[in-house]
Amino acid sequence: MAKSKITVHMMVKNEDQWVRYSLLSILPYVDTVLVTDTGSSDHTVEAIQSIKSPKIKLTQTRVNTASDVTRIREDQLKKTQTAWFWVVDGDEVYPEETAQEVISAINAGKYEGVTVRRYDLLGDIYHRQKESVGSYNMFGQTGHLVLRALNLKKLKGLHLSGDYPLEGYYDNKGTAIVGHDPALHYITNNYLYHAMYLKRSSLGGNLPMFNRGKYKIELGIPIYSVTPVVFDTPKKSWENDPKSHRSLLYTWLATLITPIKNIKRKII
Image: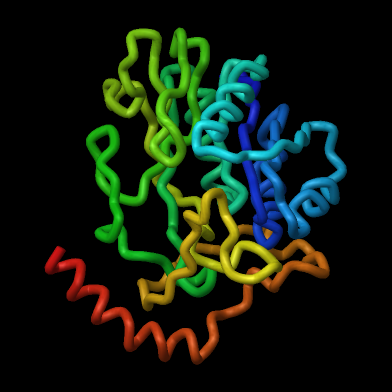
């Protein structure tokens, strides 16, 4: 089985709690990592630069509008010289078995894309949102799914359309990739760890692109998988311990809030 070359596309802003772990989790499997920082004021840039790898190509720019996000992703697409690219967000950390499954699907030579299952973390890395909450329907399956890798050789004229957070990938006929034949796409059995609902910056709270981040307090359900090995990497001074458990206060508040949220979901 031939090994395909892969370029990672990453765009970050104020992600210093997770971005280093995110990069370390995928770096052994790829050839180039294009990272664009869009104006971080915490330690995000320092975290990226602390990883001494020639694979990482960091650029810095300012994002003022939602259309700027699409422009940056298009620019990363144009700079990609490999057959495959892999979109990785700064709050996504891959366990080894998940990253290896993505790579195996890419190297299989028969897919035009790879969709990854994800754990939407709640309070810590040991609890996640139920997949019935905020689930997606993609390629005939339902759950917390995200399109993450695409094959530029098979997808002629691939481009982005729409503005953040509704931008999407389309082929040369203007058809959304998520509308393609499910047989052409691989969906992983394993999950990535998604820290969108956790603290993402040492500055406090969530300071994401256009304030879309949302720290969430909810009980969720336990995760029984083995945690990503990169979480055993010695942490930097600005990083919280990623393996720490959520506090008793969080659990108490979540116990009160969760039933109310469940009622609202049934009504809506």
